[in-house]
Length: 81
Image (cartoon, rainbow, N blue to C red; front, side):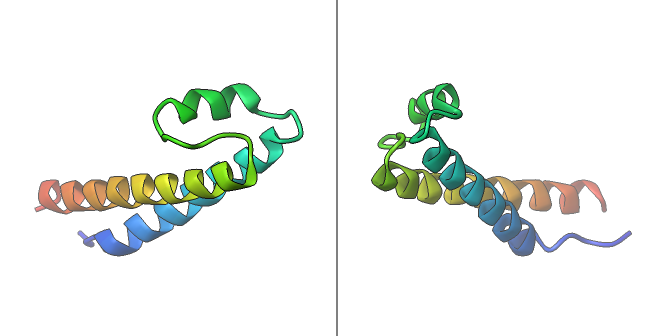
């Protein structure tokens, strides 16, 4: 069976989750998804419905997605032996 590239999976998940968190932070400034941003803001300190908060959320979410993707890829490759 094929092995997963853990770094590529981590980067792709990090980019997708980071972009989603940033876009949700921006849309929350206009009243959409405010509850989600407030909820995730409990985990990502500084993430709120402002431009600065959206960028903070982008960084946290990228790191979160990257580490999660690395772990999933690594575990997949370990269990796939």
